[in-house]
View 1 (tube, rainbow, N blue to C red):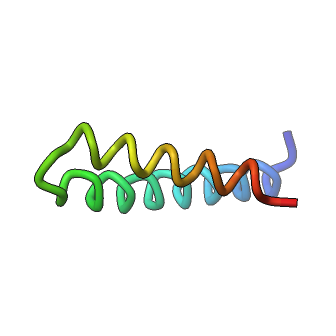
View 2: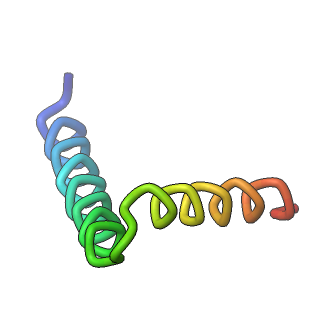
Length: 52
């Protein structure tokens, strides 16, 4: 593996971890964890279907 390629993969992984952490903070911030997770999941799912 090329060093520059390896570096970019590490950066991508860090970005994914930060984004997922932010999402979990929003979910955990809601009073009802289960409904918060389900609504977020469905919003993402609906957006994915509607996306061209």
